[in-house]
Length: 339
Ligand SMILES: Nc1ncnc2c1ncn2[C@@H]1O[C@H](COP(=O)(O)OP(=O)(O)OP(=O)(O)O)[C@@H](O)[C@H]1O
Image (cartoon, rainbow, N blue to C red; front, top):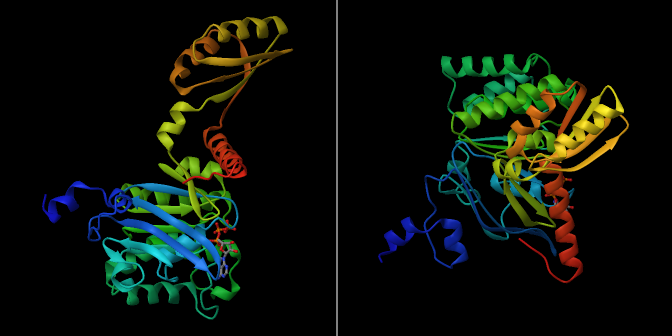
């Protein structure tokens, strides 16, 4: 087999694992291969393999200090890797930073712009630095600013944390980047601004951007991410596809009916529905767990009865997160570990 055919046949991440050298693929928006970073003797990131394609949205999770910001800073070229490489569209994030970052939008965890500049000045500077200052570009900046509700006449030093975050989002998004990196993007945002941010990020992905965002807000991750990667002490300990997590993890249901007798009747009906488990009755309240695959059966059972109040909790990500961390901690206690 020729070298070219080897490159086409083998996924670059797999290729690294197999010890096959490939060129950096120019059609892959974001690729990390064995990426590592040491601060002195402390290994903050260890052997990260990650590939993100167009339109993919990856939630990057992990406890404090697990290496999320370090990864994002390696991808922006602010840090030099100690091992491995990171590339955007085939351009190395450290040695070929200028080209790598032409199509990048980045929201840092602590936006620290020159406090003397106004938002308008920063946005205009961003346009000039990108060589994008035509009427259409100025219009795009205006639209993004309006969506986020930013007063661009104020100096950065006078802005609240939330308004500085909105400005960081505008700077990252107005030019429609092909790769979007967001470090805890909802920090400081009120619920309305969080919704706008979610719409903007989803819109960018729908337009084909590859998105990697870190977050501690699991409900937000559940809403935005198509995949999740869990980091602990600098190492990936689990990865999951959100669609698969939705399918396989149970929902928790709580229904309140008018009388204790109705509660017993509902519990019996639910108990006879395949896919429903852990049915409990307490006075007028019925609780159970069910998987997404039997959602319609559960709805039919409920619809035939006089339910006064109903709540369904989606627990997929919380349970996965807790289980994965528990499993990793137990494995380490027994001398193992995981990637
Ligand atoms: N400049 C630095 N010098 C030394 N150690 C650092 C430096 N930056 C980060 N670290 C250490 O590297 C590890 C990973 O830090 P990092 O900020 O990447 O974690 P994180 O997952 O983003 O955490 P958080 O969720 O709290 O933001 C931590 O132990 C941190 O103390």
